[in-house]
Image (tube, rainbow over all chains, first blue to last red; front, side, top):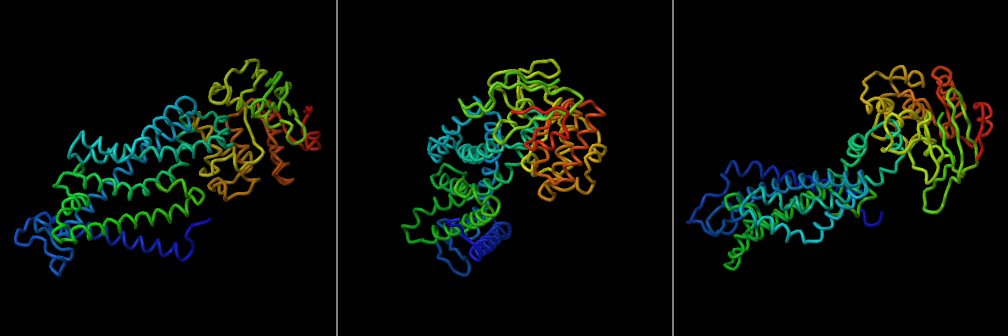
Length: 280
Length: 209
């Protein structure tokens, strides 16, 4: 029980997170279509500080940073969500297979997990995206292919504990094949854990995508994400345009904290005893 | 005849729970297996139910020597032996409704026949069948487990302390269901219990380990 937020604090965290997320997602959905995607260049309005006309100021090409950040966030979240889901599906498949089959297939699959985990994720991600520069699919793959291993571990340990349950004995006695035990008993049992892992992975994936784009290895410039915006704004800070870094960063932090907050509340409710394992 | 000869089995290396015992379960009657807690009664059940490979000895079903256990046993051999466990709660998937619990062996073997006759036999109402395990009592759940064990009309039935968690009237009801199965289908039953009084009344012959 130690360290777990309780009662009023849980509610405050949940409602604070939900409120922030709804606000940010609504803004990201509504604002860019209404005001153009923030990609129109205005050379007469370069690096304007925040004001009524431009709440977040403008960037080095005179683009409105408010609209541009929200459009960027939209792309960041989309890429992160797809990566998280792909990664979770892959990890769950490997975890269920390893746990259910056991023996040498288990050993082989878990060594693959160790191999992926042995290399720093960002480094492995960089290798993957540099093979396919500027491809959105490559960015998603580079995140998905480096993060399935954790999910596979969690799911496998869950299946290992299920395997010893008497109801699996009963299923075998009732003529169920290995495959049937897998999809009737193991898969449904790990779905809540896997769904939770996916949500917990989203903020992490946002940061990964941001890091790749900031390094110039991520999304192509016409699909600017928060990472691209931060990368572009980096040099302008030296010219005194602090808002180019501050506002997109705040937006990123607020969004990822909100998703984490919701996931944390969900985790405490669904799987209280697995708290530490799921801190991705 | 379901039989085990010279069974040696255990869980931890070097610690044998069964030390070379012989068990015979003839068709058409109830054979009792008595013994104190921890003597290996449930291990006998698991080995004869083809759920655990013995370290030594052999198991045969109607004269055919078994050489694979669990999933490695041919489906026809596995399903020839029905199993009812002591504790009904861990023996059912918590996500299943009672209907799914009873129907699962039929569906797993590719049959779509209804289960109403079966559930009526073990005394489960249609309303109970819609519930999930946490919404029913141990007795009701054990009825579903017995229904599941009988779903494939097994030639042998192993009841491992089937009635240990149940009250007297449910015990009597389930014993009657098993007895009818013996009379009508010639099922061979292995009734395992630490309650010798129950076995004296129920079984024609009682083995002790």
